[in-house]
Length: 81
Image (tube, rainbow, N blue to C red; front, top):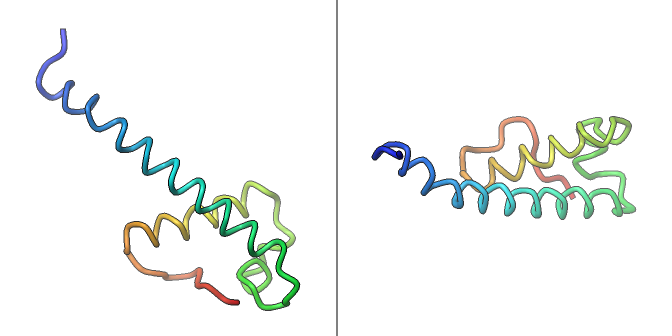
């Protein structure tokens, strides 16, 4: 049997899923645009992520996307193109 608190947690799961999928899509776009860029000044090269593995680059993209969506600020990764 679900209590009041359990129902609340289950009712906000679709919101968390939507936010994660939105952040994932924008992170993939953010990474793709930087990876196809012919310029030397983009965030992958500027912050030395160009030689890192794919997971680290994805996490950096996801971090930037979450900071953009939640408007908590851009401390260490800024747009450079």
